[in-house]
Image (cartoon, rainbow, N blue to C red; front, top):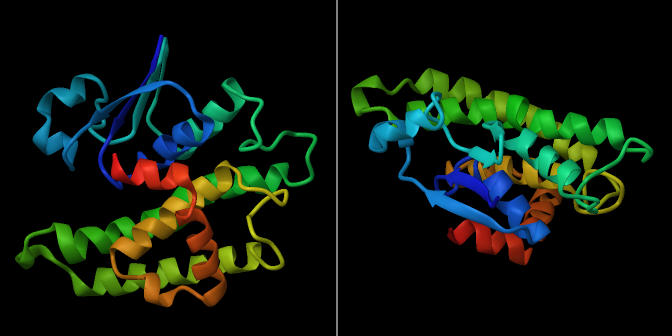
Length: 203
């Protein structure tokens, strides 16, 4: 049975879409208008949260973008995109997968909501500034993680880079890329140059 992926352009579902493209796996893409819970009321029958991504693989249904990337690497591997328990950076790899969303994407969603998505009268500049500063503070961990490296783990491109790369894409989309250090800018340029990234970005 073909993997099903529900996706909104440049939303968190970019992570598993990019991973699917990198791995060359067969999948069926369901492109939705953002936010799907507003424009596609019937989507809640598929994912009661009303969020993207939602991936269905036979009996498996998953809604967490970094978790789906880990699943794809482990279930459809072996693949160099995954890091195994016998590799030195395994713990770091898992940490980056979780940090990518909980620490790097989360504060940006508040910046996005209260600077762009809410009606003018509901926008809150203090929230925008506070969570912008939160994100930029946490971004220092990426700078540290890249010290002396092209990628975050095991000297190669992995799912960790896909997961963190999406956080950098979101930052770029909401006007925070000017705050990137030269090292992070170079890293993001390497990610953007990947053919699978470019294909996923257009879908």
